[in-house]
Length: 66
Image (cartoon, rainbow, N blue to C red):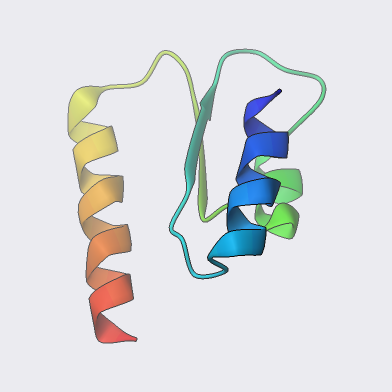
C-alpha cells in the first residue's frame, strides 16, 4: 500500500488526522494532489529535521486551535 492510499484509508477513520506525507521524487503525487486527498502537508525528501519539526509543531498548533 502506498503512503497516499494509507493516508486516504486513515482519513476515512479520522477525518481530522494531520497527515504529513514525505516522499522522494515522484511522478505519482505532488503537493496539490496530496492536499486534495486531505493530506495536510507534503514534504519532498531529502528534508531537514528542523523543517520537519516546524511542520509538526504547526500542524499540532492548528489542531489545538480547532
